[in-house]
Image 1 (cartoon, one colour):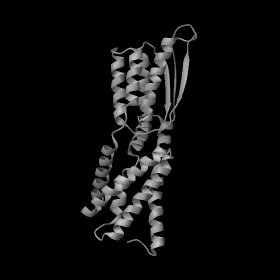
Image 2 (image 1 turned 180 degrees about the vertical axis):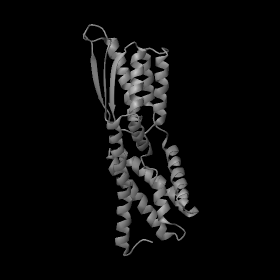
Image 3 (image 1 turned 90 degrees about the horizontal axis):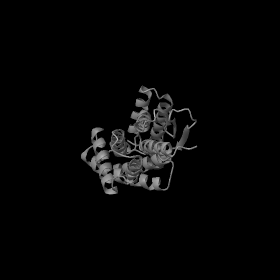
Length: 262
C-alpha cells in the first residue's frame, strides 16, 4: 500500500533536487538538500543518487512493512541560475526548521521554479560589460572595447535565439563564436585602431562554461567521480566548440581574403 504522506515528501525532495540540478548546482549539494528534506519529516532511511542527467531517490519509514518507494527524474535543459539554487537552499533550511508543511513547501518550490531569469535588457547590459572588461584585460584598446560591447550584445542575442530553437548547446556555442569572430574581423578591417584578437577573446569569455568547470572540480573533490567526469567532458567539448567556431571563421577570412591575417 502506498503511503501518501511518504510520497508527498519524496516528490517534494525530488522537485527541490530537480530545480537545483537544472540550474547548475553541485551533485553533493543536490543530494544533501534532498536528504535533509526527507529527514526533516522523520524519514531517516533515504538514499539519493544524483548525476548531471538524472536523480534517483528511494526511501521508506524503516518499519517492518514493505513501504519502500523509489522515483527517478530525468534532468534536461541544464542552465546556470545561482539565484534559484540559493533560494532552494534557503527553503531547505526553512523546511528543516519545521516552519513549513509539505504542501506549503511544494507551493514555495513552484514559485521558485516559475520565477523567470533576469529581463533581456539587463542580460544584454551584463554581456556588454563582461565582453568589454575582458577585452580590456587581454590588452584591447578603447576602440576594441567599444567594438566588443557591440559584438557581445549581438553574440548573446544570437545565442538566445538559437536556444529558443532548442539547438544543441555545442552548436549554439559554435555559431555564436563564429558570429563574434566575423564581427571582430570586419571591424578590424574597417577601423585602423581596432585589433581583432582582444575583441574575439573578450567576447568569447561570455560563453566559457566557468561554472560547469568549477562544479566538476568540486564534484571530484567531494568524491563524485562520475559527475565530475561528465561535467569535465561537457566543459571540454564546449570549449572546443567555441574555439572551432572562431577558428573556422578566421581561417575562411584568411582564405577568402587571399592572405594571412595580421
